[in-house]
Length: 319
Length: 262
Image: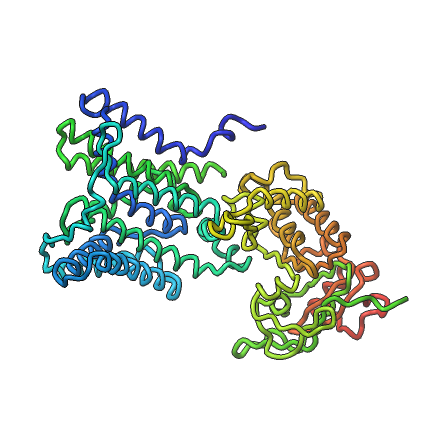
């Protein structure tokens, strides 16, 4: 007999909404400034970098992988594009493309190591995390790049919607989410990403080139990190070699909070957007309350463990 | 009596893995509209034979004929294009995906026009319609094709896997241990389905360790032994224990009564 539990979406998919509602209700009750269009717009601007990284991370986690190098690869791409533009004097569009290309190249390296040598994604990306970090520091000499071409900060500009400032980067982030959502849901390659995460052996046996799917996912994730780098540069106005430190784990937190299973094959990319917003709301709300930023890190840590617990329990629940 | 039509045939297949000879001149013959069981002890060359027939491995020597024409499959995809569908042992389905999605995995249909050609959008409605029709055709009693496979029982899942092979095969259906790991009732459900596949006119190659199941539905039994075909038996004439004796070598092929051969 179909019970109410069968009809509701799995708890993992409702979790992010519940978390978001609770967080909003809490901060709305404790601070005056929280519920304002301006503040929500600010939160979206704060999450756009993490949000776009989280798209790439979602793709990889859907294949039952994980990418620990995401934030640092983003930082490298940011340094490459700003230094190429500012120091080498390359035209800004070319510098941007080269920056995104470097991030895609790191994705390719991750993907090749995962598919060809069959190394676990965890170890591979732990390695590339350190490599990308070291290259970033060496190439930038640990210096922030300040003379950034104006084209690179364009996405940080805002336009007015009913008296509220909305950043172009926010619009880009939402467009990227909708595009990826469509791709995953309504195209064959998108469905194959789920199939690979679900049962790689069965997917291979029906004739889908699973290694090509995986490789494509890692490269595509790299491209998203590259775009996130551009957003980061646009937001801060500089190329920062130490960017991506918090984003690295925040992106994974956003994906897991968004209900995507770490075991692969289950999840909706739009959930990661909610997850990123939850992280953003927590950071923003705790700041408004005047809480020390260390507690924000503490709360995110607790949240991610809660989310993974829900994932694990709903899997063990027999379905 | 006219000679039965032969759908698939293999002559003198040899496959070596280093020092090990898995296939040592194996012959094989599948007739139209039959269920041919393939049995054999571990290491008898049973799975190497099936892999060669389904394109999963390339034999070192020998030839394979499909409808009398020589074929060489370099991959399972090529075998599939030739109308040979394989259903592998360990419930080869993606659990979190729907039944319809599983049926069309790797052969998705795109929409027509702009949505399909430019946006590469899938035609989910059409795939669902075909899935419902094919499953109804095979009398697989599952209510909704849009439920995730993981919501099904083990037997139903296996039925989906068998039906996937049967729904798209044009020539041959190969089933590798389809009733392993199933209870009695669920096993019977899958056996019923296999019979319906045969009755639709598709020949079935059934690899199984389960002797009662083999005797229940096979029309002929191919016994693999030491990389060769030891004999092809008639399950209506030979006993189960003699069959096991042929399989293990306790009964040499020349001592099998003529009426028991098929």
